[in-house]
Amino acid sequence: AQSVTQLGSHVSVSEGALVLLRCNYSSSVPPYLFWYVQYPNQGLQLLLKYTTGATLVKGINGFEAEFKKSETSFHLTKPSAHMSDAAEYFCAVSDRPGGSYIPTFGRGTSLIVHP
Amino acid sequence: DGGITQSPKYLFRKEGQNVTLSCEQNLNHDAMYWYRQDPGQGLRLIYYSQIVNDFQKGDIAEGYSVSREKKESFPLTVTSAQKNPTAFYLCASSMVGSNSPLHFGNGTRLTVT
View 1 (cartoon, rainbow over the protein chains, first blue to last red):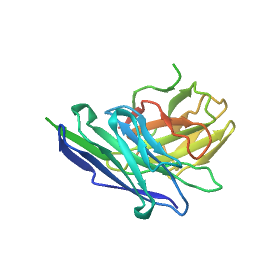
View 2 (view 1 turned 135 degrees about the vertical axis):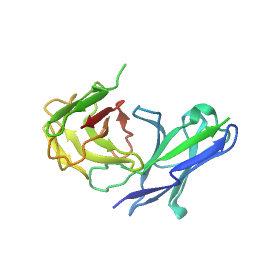
View 3 (view 1 turned 90 degrees about the horizontal axis):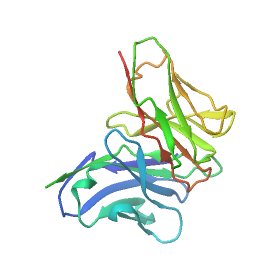
View 4 (view 1 turned 45 degrees about the vertical axis):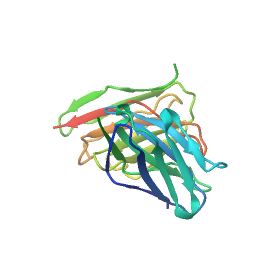
């Protein structure tokens, strides 16, 4: 069964600092991986996704993530945090071969940005 | 604009009452999903449907029921059997396929007292 672990329920950075949100997955087959962002009292929006091909994936709002098969990781980064980046971030994996490919979500990481 | 509409945004009910949450999409997606979100627990799958008139239980289906009579609509009923129904409920849709991302509605916050 697939699973997703997001290290750190809260990450705090200063405005302009590097953002690093960690995601590790377990999967018996090559997975499809996603990062979503959620602002308060709203639904989730897709930031980026990895399917096949290039392991460095660029998303919206300056975010990017790198798929590292050897480390079973898909960490999300942004070179310079902005106050508007403060939100909840979810990593998701989808990999049920022959099945329904229903994504499994991590528990989320709340990004706090200080002025 | 295409999207997913959940209504109402806030819902209050007394314990012991059934309540139905609405979810409508105009994205022409075959698959629809219901998730429950509680603080610190991420999203947990309640039910999903990949085709009209068919749906499958997710990880926490007990105390919930759904129907899929139309492609556009996937209502969720929270029954009195659900032990702890107060939560934020999210509906999503997608094309069927492993690399298809989910499109989410803005959620319904249900409070049962």
